[in-house]
Length: 559
Image 1 (cartoon, rainbow, N blue to C red):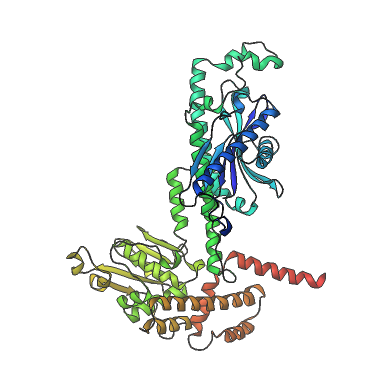
Image 2 (spheres, rainbow, N blue to C red):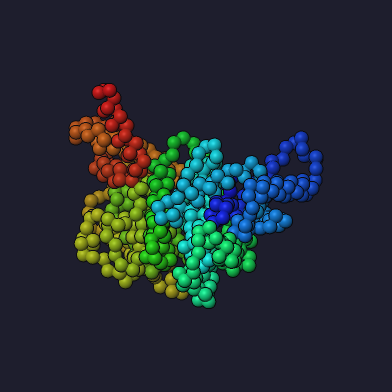
């Protein structure tokens, strides 16, 4: 990541000062003309010597601007600094008191001054964002460190991250806030222990109340203790090496967490919904972590699991289930049988609650991974495995342990289907079973109060059945067929939403649009029901875009 992290301090004698700085140096791109110009090792050593020279010049320029007291200094001028090298990318992370490049000194200096003077959040402790295109953008987090000899018994510090990419820095806000708070809390807790020990030996509050002094000689009356280094405040012998490790990891992790992807055409609805859910999840976790001692780590982990269960994996890749599991829709159809599979898929496409009850969570989760590929991401509400029944408004995919009793109103409802997974005698004889033996290991019993025949079904289901029954088509080809079918029907959903919900057209006009979309004829009721259910999976971004466009059209004639 092309950014720089710095620790800043407000000195009582010299004002805002930069204490420690970590920057990332990317390896130069090799060019054909320079292929044999120099030995790589020699070039790296020359770069290191040049970097040290720039650091020394930056330090000397800082020294010329004013004396540096103990509180303003982290590493002595003769200290070579800290260097870490990322073996994967070749990026070097350098840490010293001031930036390696002299042109960055003024940028970091300005960020330091602003973070400890005018650009602060209410209460003077917490995160804030500021900056411009010329001097870069800054994410700053100010905080206090306890000091028994300081004014007000505390000193003011800030950690700033400076970058030229405003969008990237803003998108990294939750990540930076979460990890910088860990570093700050570690510094504060260590300094608090030292503060308590010093106060126990010699309470400074009583000493100051019984002393007579003037503001002019106040620092000298404290035996020259107006300037204390962060090392002495924390009694941490390897403080700067530890901060170098933390800042280096932060730059590396922040640069790798967001990656650019080449998209062909506009993003799909699934992509938009996934992005919205990820943003909501990060904001929710950030708000919980920001609570004042209310949320424990266990609660945060539980929240992440609940939010993460709604995020489907990409086509089931990367999911590893122990024991027997379903590999694809074709495999599920082979195990259940064509009639039972068709009835189950019909309930999935109609938005009914699909309940699987059994003693093998891995098998049930693999079934859900296969089945949820039939729906848009926005229509999937999944609880993989639970010890109690959950209502349909919370999930349309629900896994239950075998001892859970289904409520009577659910069993008698035509808007749900139950698949009971029972172990056979063969499953007790073998501990390790291959995937192809699922049909002999388990017995699957479908039950539903819906008596409506599913032989007609929606058009999408009929086309999917044709693709699955064609053995000449591989599993990958069938997956692409399903993807094309989903995109085709999502486009129909968008047209219907715009026509009926946004424009507010009547029933007759809507019927004409359904005929144009090819949703009438055999299975018309199922097609309309599928379109209405899938309409709930449209992204907020798309709906907001449509409403904004409609308002703009309504205002334009009057203008």
